[in-house]
Amino acid sequence: MNKSQLADRQGFTIIEIIVVLGILATLLSIGYVRFTDIARRAPLSATVETVIADLRGQQTKAMSGYAGGGSAADDYGVYFDTNSYTLFKGPVYSALDSTNAKTLLPDYITCSSVLPDSSVVFTKGDGEVLNYSTSGNTITLTQTLSGEQKTITINRYGAVLSVE
Image 1: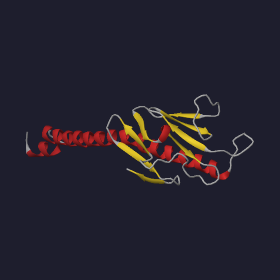
Image 2 (image 1 turned 30 degrees about the horizontal axis):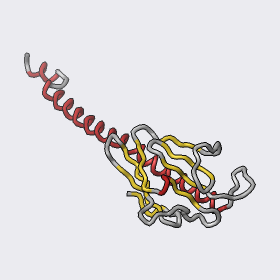
Image 3 (image 1 turned 180 degrees about the horizontal axis):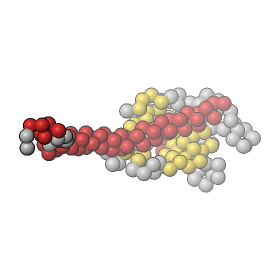
Image 4 (image 1 turned 45 degrees about the horizontal axis):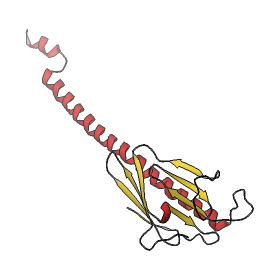
């Protein structure tokens, strides 16, 4: 082949193709690791926000005097179980109450609590925590795949103090 024929050839060498494929493989693997980490953390953060919103909703019902289909205002609370939590009306949780609203936690998320009777009860009128314990009122949600935990701490006034 003469010089003019070589100059007319176009394309990439095998080395160039291997380098480009190596770079692409590296970028894709980094992206995959990042995506799976986000996919593991997202349900826990969303669940914590949902639990906090439900706690605040129950406190608001107690403070506003919401009768909830009954004839008089009442206390409202949230009962926590390992794989679910239940919104209830009244000073004490009863599993047999038909007005309870049970919410299942997402797969791979579990709940443990340091609460009297595994529940937080807000008093009618002022919304303070009826069953406040000086040893602590905390709810810990755990993402079992990653081991990540978030703890919700509630003070005697029903305010969420921290999420760690």
